Length: 315
Image (cartoon, rainbow, N blue to C red):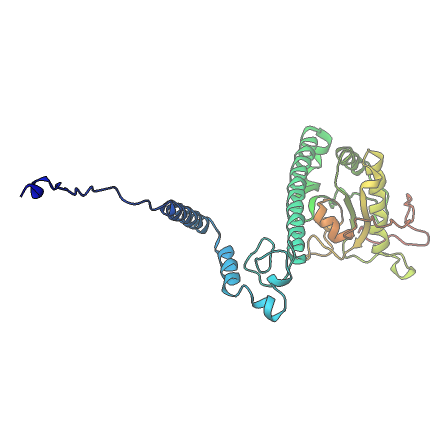
């Protein structure tokens, strides 16, 4: 009994400890999740700010990215760009240059059209200014204002057209001759002075009516007469200060361009036409390289009609 009493009593206590160590794998997983979410939002932002054509190009590439590499042919396999076509239009599937020849040609055409539009605007502005200037000169000059009914100023598609027309009781030239009447000389001198600083080229044309020249069978006709009168007018304009180099052409049109077709022999058909050309009209009439046409020497006008030519009706 004594031995049993002396036996030690052992009490076992179970201590509850903390969780075991799991390492840092969860941190890596969380970082991957955050990175994926950031990439997803960036992708959504890019898709929202990308044009439709670019989206089609990207979709076409990812639909078969290895097709060209495996089968050959034109495409991303032989391009420095992973987008088919490259350039500024990602919807293209052919051509591996940043700017194709067609794009460059389109840009050149656009630039040329813009330059032409700007030039046309400046032409219109110059012509309006010149028209107002000539109108003012005629109005303020009592002598010219007296002949206002014989001076017609109009804006046409070719430019500013100034026509000095004949009058039955006040002819510009002697009958059948290219001799300038004194009042006609005054008109031409004033207009020539007004054209002294003109920037555009000038076309000068002489016209007659349809009355046959009195000595047409000898070779001198209304064609030669209209050319002589145009050249005589040119000399008066140049003498007044108009630059001779600004003349694009001097022509005689005879009765081929009547002002009154219903009355071919009317005095109003006899006229001198001065046209300040727009650049577009200059290119159309004189050639795109703007090379001035040569002015052929014409017979010098005299106080009398040509040799051996009987004066016909005033034309």
